[in-house]
Length: 172
Image 1 (spheres, rainbow, N blue to C red):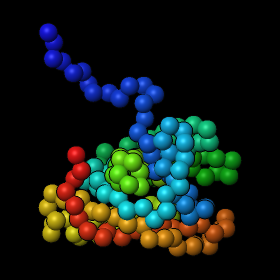
Image 2 (cartoon, one colour; image 1 turned 30 degrees about the horizontal axis):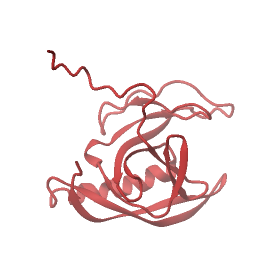
Image 3 (cartoon, rainbow, N blue to C red; image 1 turned 90 degrees about the vertical axis):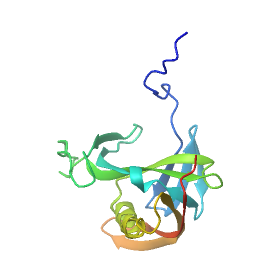
C-alpha cells in the first residue's frame, strides 16, 4: 500500500477565499465561493514571514496574473505591455495570507497592486520588521481602524489605516 502524497496541489477550481480592498470605496470584502461579504474594520493575523511581491496584471473578468519577484529585495523584470494611455499594464503588487476566524472565517489571500494599499502595507511591514526581534516566533495581529481619504488625479481614493495591536502565535 502506497503512502505517497504527491505534490500537495489544491484541486483545480478549489481556491482560497480572498480579501478584496476597494480603494475607490474604502471598503474591504471577503470573497468566498463567488460571494462577496463586506468586513468592517477587521482584526487579523498577517503572515508577513511568507509575504511575496510581484508584478501583477489585473484585467476585468479575469483572474490576476503574477510574475513573482525572486525575493523582497530583488525584482523580476517587468513584463511588457501598455494600456491605451501608454501606462504599463503590469503593476507592482503583493500577496500575503491573513487569518481571522471571526472576520474571514479562516485564512484568506490578500493581494493588491493599488498604490495606496501598497503604501499602507509597506508602512505596516516596517512596523512588523521593527517588532519581530522582540516577538520571536509570533505573528502580528493587525487591526484596520478606518481609512484616510486621498485626493488624486482620478478623484478621492481611500488608504486603509492598519496598526499592529499585539503579537500572537501562528494559528494552526
